[in-house]
Length: 296
Image (cartoon, rainbow, N blue to C red; front, side, top):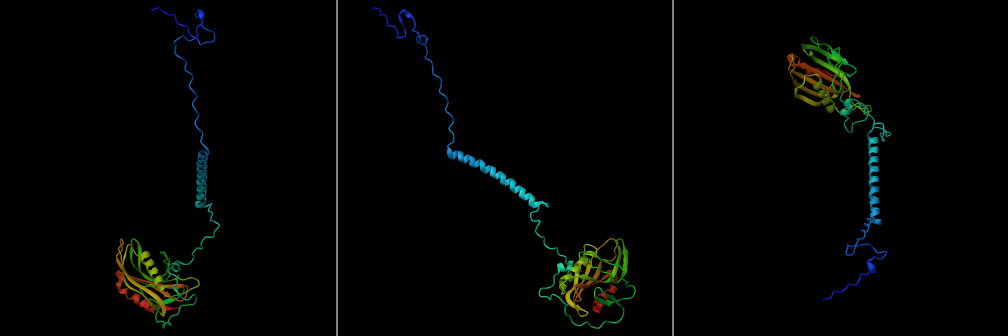
């Protein structure tokens, strides 16, 4: 076949020279890639989304402010100097005597005036002990009994036993042990009332005697616990036997009695009698003294 001469490319000119202004890429070379387009910007939140985010921020700030405020208020409430209720008047202090607090007058009792009781029987003859403060008198005994010159004031009620008789039954490592017949006056009613809750007062005084004047622990055999009259006055009488042990003490039991007598005043008369088990020959004194009580 005859060889044909190819037609020149459009970018060639006669003489094999390149035309001006054309890319000088060799014929048949790879085409130039255009630069990649810029990445699109992240879309901005629309109006509702922006408002919700703002509300969450505001809510967090408000919660923090509220927590700080509550903390400050609690500090003020529980601090002594910053008590916001300090301007309020505190409840009045109960200044009544212990027995009046523990044993208020019975409901329906008169608010003033002495309690009524049968007339007192005649005063028995013979030596007597008179306790003007308590408002009673009672039988006195000869030797070994002698006048009481001390003051026993112990226990929750602190009944001041300062009048009566006693004798020492033995000495031991704890001191002197006594047989005793002692009396006292104890505030037992409000200032505007003189009627006493004798049962409550009697039980309180008996419990105080047992807790303060005997070795601990001890056990009790109750003998008598009743409302009665002594010398024509209302009274509560408790009689009991206590059992105990103490180092060096020979006595291991004692017969005792406590009488609380309404003498028509805001104070009650208290009569306390104790006979150690080592001197049982004097046990009769308990009933003898109680029968001899008279108001003064």
